[in-house]
Amino acid sequence: MGDKKYFVLMEGGNDTSQVFASRQPRGAALKAATRGHTNINLRERGTKRVHVFTGSTEMVTPPASAPAWLKAKGKIKKANVRKVRVDHL
Image (cartoon, rainbow, N blue to C red; front, side, top):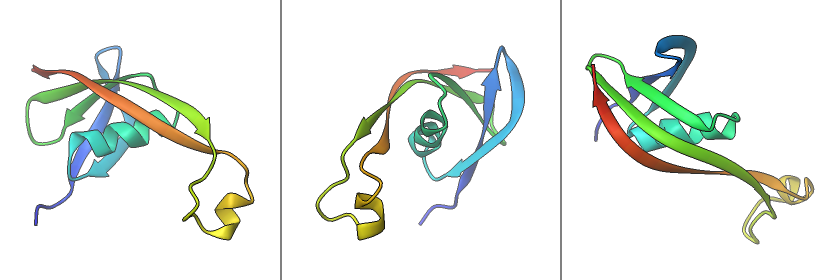
């Protein structure tokens, strides 16, 4: 199995202090979208790649298989991302 990779969120062409860990860039983009980012540029540490995504969130009802404490919240936040391209630095 592969190890986790680290992706640094970029804004305005510069790195921010936010780092997301995931095996795939999409997983890191979903985490960024959940935190409210819509234009997501993730620089993969150790490489010269920048993964570019667009993201959004919506409030949905929890699934029937969700635990009771989650159903008690009423609505939960669900992230959605779409990969646009991969840039090379």
